[in-house]
Amino acid sequence: MKAVVINQYGSKDELIEQEVTLPELTENQVLVKEHATSINPIDWKLREGYLKQMFDWPFPIILGWDVAGVITEVGSGVTDWKVGDKVFARPETTRFGTYAEETIVDDHLLAKIPENISFEEAAAVPLAGLTALQALFDHGKLQKGEKVLIHAGAGGVGTYAIQLAKQAGAYVITTASEKNHELLKKLGADEVIDYHTTNFAEVLSDIDVVFDTMGGEIQKASFSVLKPNTGRLISIVGIADEEVAKEKNIKAESIWLQTNGKQLQEIAELMASGKVVSVIGEVFPFSRQGVYDAHALSETHHAVGKIVIKMAD
Image (cartoon, rainbow, N blue to C red):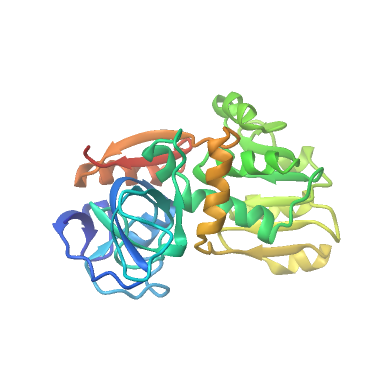
């Protein structure tokens, strides 16, 4: 099958189109013919070599860990899924990722694509949607009526986090450029702060949960807006200074996404009823150039919503 791979770590120039043979299916796996995948920052961070200690894989490496498509083959132990099912997933993180015509997924990680959702909308969800859900609820323990600050609300993770927090009955505050304010209010944000003109730390206080997708100075300033003793800061980029958290008796936690088909199915049901939507900023074709351009956009940190790769029909 055709895949876009890297054969060594480095810049976008390392992305090449190549024929790759997937391993044999195990009894609890399915083969999915891909209709769409999407781009996440982990893709190009891994491409650059930042994660090689965590994932010490032989080359070639197929990047990408979101898939939406149709099952074409099932392992001997698979009982809940059949050939022809339309599914999406955040597969396990292996060197056989989703920038490919086909991908292998463990059956317990699959979710059904709702009838009213396109492959592109479904492919945008898994990694970003699960990250948002787990950060807010599994780790942040966000409750109805609490105030949550979601940094970078217009990004891939932020757009899902706003909607999921709103669905849970939280008061949602987010930061974004002015051009994205209208979109984020439509998604459910109660307050949107323009980070170009306003320092959020000067106007906010008594926040219950901060969802940090930025790190650095933003994370540092976030400690000052949290409620002492009960505030929670959940980060997807690591905790730089744990002493600050200890001083204010704030729970500060850095998280790594756990693959979870059951939670993905919960998001699918919210999408089926129109309560959660995928915000897709750009769609690129599945080719070496398409993936190259998608990485270039993702690396700017200014893409709105998700960047999707669409396979040929």
